[in-house]
Structures are given as structure tokens and as C-alpha cells.
Length: 98
Image 1 (cartoon, one colour):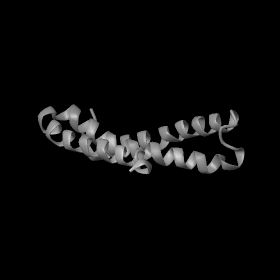
Image 2 (cartoon, rainbow, N blue to C red; image 1 turned 30 degrees about the vertical axis):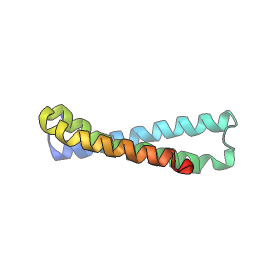
Image 3 (cartoon, one colour; image 1 turned 90 degrees about the vertical axis):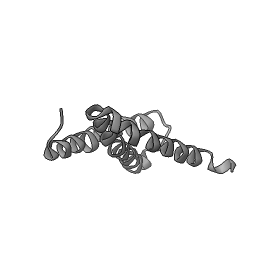
């Protein structure tokens, strides 16, 4: 279990930066290889993918670690956060139709 602050930072670094590099590389490469995105946009596609994945890790990793450690306190904090994220994502997705 990740308990020491140094271990938590290492976990977030590995999960947030390094693993997202692999995902962004395969994702951007696939989009370009199948002519969904032009090769001229490979680096911006890769960077956008990497930033999106990294932000997701930074948002969800602390919540996940908190849930694993302390279920009751985590539930009290997690429910409002998930509700807020759901509303924010819904507004973002459907903003053009509003």
C-alpha cells in the first residue's frame, strides 16, 4: 500500500507521466496510421492525449487511494466530487446544444 508521501509522489509520477506517455504514443500513432489525423498533427495530438490522460490520473489517483485507505471518509468526499465531475463533463459535452 502506498502510505509514505514520497511513495505517493512516485506513484503519481509513474502513473501520471510515464504510463500516459505510452498511451499517448499508441493513441496518436494509431490515429495517424489510420489516416484519422494527418501526420502533420502527430505531435499536437500526442501532447493533447498525454495531457488529458495525465489530468485524469491526477484527478482519480488521489480519490482511488483515499477510497482504498478509508472507506467511510472517502465515501463522504468522493460522492460530491464524482457528482461535480459528472455535471461538469455533461455541460462540456452538451455545451453546443445549450
